[in-house]
Each structure stands twice: as structure tokens, then as C-alpha cells.
Image 1 (cartoon, rainbow, N blue to C red):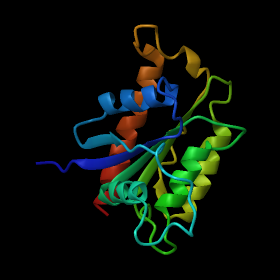
Image 2 (tube, rainbow, N blue to C red; image 1 turned 60 degrees about the vertical axis):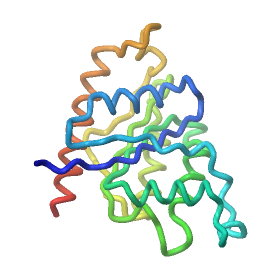
Image 3 (tube, one colour; image 1 turned 45 degrees about the vertical axis):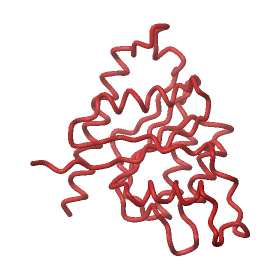
Image 4 (cartoon, one colour; image 1 turned 90 degrees about the horizontal axis):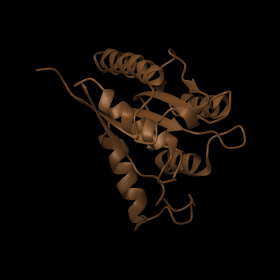
Length: 186
């Protein structure tokens, strides 16, 4: 029996109708059986403050860190705000990487997909997130690079995903699955 890898999916947008959340859900549906994708909510995390990161730890911190620890791999799906990652995503990275020396990210395979209605598809957010993950020892998938511009047109009113985007997402998630399997097998 093949191993099933648990993937923690962090979505940078908190909007209920978020394009990035829809893309994360589409990736979950397209994922091969070797991957089990689960969106890990970040919207309830209090702003990271080292003064409050002491026993008793905030319940939201404990939940989030536990979900990261239980994951075999990481997948980030994010929009771009002001040429960088959204504040909730940065806060989640800070919470998950603390207390100092106890990061819950390190050593895991990861990937990032950024999507934006703009033409450059979240290029700045994608690269800022990669920079954070390199510091945190996450082994990021390099290809295919995934900056999806024009994201406002990906879904029809009935929620159907555009076939061209679906094809790209399929290639992305299949390549990511091979990456996770390769790293997990050493």
C-alpha cells in the first residue's frame, strides 16, 4: 500500500469567496491519492506576540502548531498584497516558527501557488514567501513556478474552473506529489 502524505494547506486570503481558497479546494480535488490536502485555518490566530507565547499558550497557537507538526508537507496558496504576502500569512509563519528554535515548518517539502486578478499573478508574494521558507528550512518545489495572473476569470458563476487553469493545476499538483514522495523517501 502506498503512503498517503498529509499536506497542510495555508491560504493567505481570509475572504469567504476568496479565489485562492477556491484554488486550494480545486487542488484538493485534483490531488492524486498519495496526497491528503487539508486547509489549516489561519484567520483566528492572534497577532504573534512573544509576551503571550508562554504557558498557558493561546489555544489557537496550540491548534495551529499541532496541525503543522502532524503534516508531512506544506502547500501555500496566496494572493499578493502590496507586493508581498498578506498579513494573516506572515502572522501564521511567525506563529508556526516559534518559540525560537522550535519551528513546526522545518524539514518538510513545500510549494507555493500565488494568484491575483493582476497581470503578474502574485510574483512578489510568491518570492517573499519562498524567502521565509528557505530560512525555515522548508524544501520548496522550484518548478513549475506558479504565478497565476487574471485569477478573477478562473471560475464561472456556477463555480466551474476554467479548463486551461485546471490543466495547469493538475500539472502543478502532480509535480508536487512527486516532490513530496521523493523527499519523504530520502
